[in-house]
Image (tube, rainbow over all chains, first blue to last red):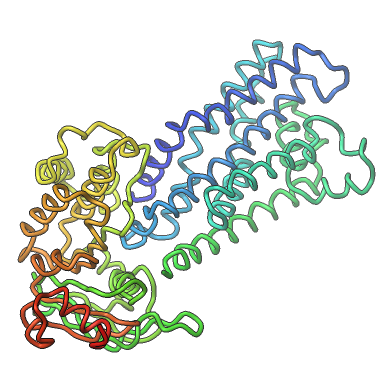
Amino acid sequence: MRMLNFAKRNFKELIRDPLSLVFEIVLPLFLLFIFKQINIPGDTYKLENFTPGIIIFGFSFITLFTATLIAKDRSSSLLIRLGTSPMKSSDYILGYILSLMPIIIIQDILFFVVAILLGLSFSVNIVYTILISLIISILFIGLGILIGSLVSEKATGGIGSIIVQLVCFTSGMYFSKDLIGKGFAKVCEFLPFESSLNIIKGILNNNFDIISTRNIVVFSIYTVLVLIISVIVFKKKMVSDNKN
Amino acid sequence: MNAIEVNKLTKKYKDKIAVNGIDLQIKQGELFALLGTNGAGKTTTIKMLSGLILPTSGDIMINKMDMKKDTFKIKEILNVSPQETAIAPNLTVKENLEFMAGVYQIENKNKKIDELIKLFKLEEVINKKTKTLSGGWQRKVSIAASLINDPKILFLDEPTLGLDVIARKELWKVIEGLKGKITIILTTHYMEEAESLSDRIGIMVNGNLVDIGTSKELIKKTKAKNFEDAFVNIATGGEL
C-alpha cells in the first residue's frame, strides 16, 4: 500500500511542524473562546453557528499547510526521487488527502469539546457534522494540492493567506453576506465557502432548510473541478519541474 | 549483457535541444561516469533513463525492457540519488529509510535498513530528524535511501557535490564497494572522482555525447598530460 505509506510520511511531516498546529488548531480554538467571551449579539456568533465557521476557518489553514508541504516536496527533490519509483499519481493525491484526515478529525473533536465546554449542547448531530466535514475538507485539501503544485514554497504563504481571507469574508462565518451589498452577496454565492459553511451548519443544527440546492451544487462542482485540476496540474508539474 | 541500451535519445524543449540523439550501451555491473560542463545534458539524460521525463524521440532499453512499455517494471529495479538531497526533513533517518522501504514495498525491510545503517555508518544519527543533520550526513542518507530496493541500476547525480574531502572519500569507498554488483551511472564535476571510480567515461557537450572510453583511452587519444586536460580538450574541441 504505497498510498498509505506516503500518507503516513505526510502526516508525520505535518504534525511535526509546530507552526501548522498553531494555525490549524490553536488559533481557531482561541477565536472560538474569545468570541464567546465578547458575547456579540446576533445569531452569527451563537455557538451552534460560530462553531461551524471555526471548522471552515481551520480548513483554510489546512489549504495553506497542504500547499506548503507540496511546494516543499517539489523544491527538496523528494518528488524527483519518488517520480522514479513505482508510485502512481493516485498514490500521491490520495496519500496527501488521507494524511490530512486524522488532522481534520483532531481539529473537529477539539473544536467541539471546547464548544461544548462553552455551552454548546451535545447531540448526535456533532458526529454527523464531523463525518460531513471530512467530505467538505476534500475541497480545501484539493485547493492546497493545486496551490502547492503551482507556486513556490515562499509564495504558498501569500496565496494561502488569500484563501484564509476569502473564507473569513465570503463564508458568512463573521457576518451575513447581505450586509455588504448585492454584488458581494452574489460573489459569495458563487464561491464555495458559504456553501461549505451552510452544509456544516445545517447538519449540526438538524436544520436542512438552510442547505439550498445551490449550496450542494456549488460545493460539488468546486470540489470535483478542484480535484481534477489539481491532479492534472500536479502530474504536469512533476514533469515540468524536472526539465532542467 | 547490456543493462542499458540507448538509441538516438533526444530531448527538445521548444527550440532548445537538451539531448541530441545519443547512442549508448552500458554493461551490467559497469560504473559509467557521465561528464560535461554545466548544461551539457547530463541530468536530462539521467532523468530520461530513470523514467522521470519522457524523451522527445529515441529508445531506452533497461535490462531488455522497453521504457515506453514497461515503465513500472523498470522503476522497480532502478533507483536514483538526485543532485539535491531528496529526503523528508521532519522525519528521522530511520523513518526516511522506512518510508523509502514502503515506497518499494520491501519485504524484509528491517534487515535491509540495518544493512544500510551499517554500510553508511548511520548509527549515531539514526534517530535524528534529517533537517538537523549536516549536508554531508544528509547526502549519505539520501544515497543510502537509493539502495533500499537493491537496485539493479543506480543513478548517482553529483553524489559528492558540496561534501568535504573526508566525506567524499568515505562515499567513494561505499561506491567502490558497489562496483560490479550494481550498474551505476554517475554524473560528476570532479575529474578525479570519475577517473578513480568509473570503468568508462562519457563526455557530453551541448547535448551531444562526444566521446566515450576509459580515462586512459581518453588521455591517450587527446595526448593530454592527465585526465583533466583530456576532458578540457574534448569538452572545448581542442580550443583550450
